[in-house]
Structures are given as structure tokens and as C-alpha cells.
Image 1 (cartoon, helix red, strand yellow):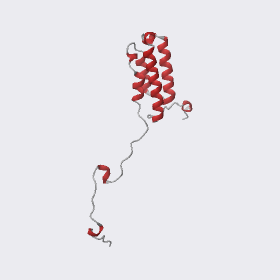
Image 2 (cartoon, rainbow, N blue to C red):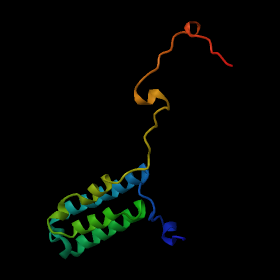
Image 3 (cartoon, helix red, strand yellow):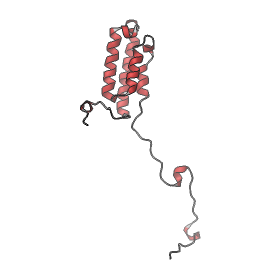
Image 4 (cartoon, one colour):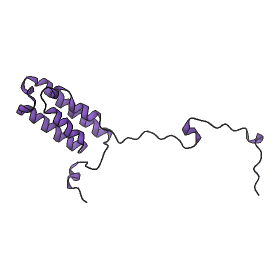
Length: 132
């Protein structure tokens, strides 16, 4: 089935994000959390503050465009609506918990992958292969 929102950058089927997208999302989240700290007297009411709603909606939309839909995004948005809890850097915490798609380098195959090394005697000391 065609996902029309996938053309806009919404990654509904992708569990992991690239390191570059995570960095961009982290910058957006840090800016939003910093802005809420700077505007603390005006957004201290949490969900009752229109300015807090505007910052949170803009942040959620920007993160949705950058990293795609994640259940954590809804959780962070809900936490931002709770007075007092919205002063915790929930947007940054959300982004930091996102897994990236960069894989760790794989270990070489064979016994060396398990931490053991096989030592062989020199070729002249080994018995000759016997083939029937």
C-alpha cells in the first residue's frame, strides 16, 4: 500500500533513524527546551499557556518531519502538557532515546570471532594430506 505521507518525510515504517537526522532532531529539541526555559514565566502553566502550546506543537511537527512518527513523540508531547513536568527537557530525552540505523562493525567469521585464535604448526611439521 502506498504511503502518501512517506513522500513528505514521515517514516511510519522505520524504527531507526540515521545519525544525521538524529543530530538535526537533537538541535530542534534542544532549541525548544531552551526556549521554554527562557520563556518560563510565560509558559509555567503548561497546557494552559497558549505560548507553550505553540512551542510544543511546532516542536512536535518539526520532529515528526525529521524522524517520522514514533510512539515516543506522543508520549513526550503528553508530558509537555503537564504543568511542572514540562520544564524537564522531554524533547531532548525523546531524541536521545531514538535508536540509529548505524550498525556496529561485524566481527570476522570463524573462531576468532569468539575470542579464540587457532595456532597451527609450520607447514613442514604438519602431516601431509592423504586423499584417497
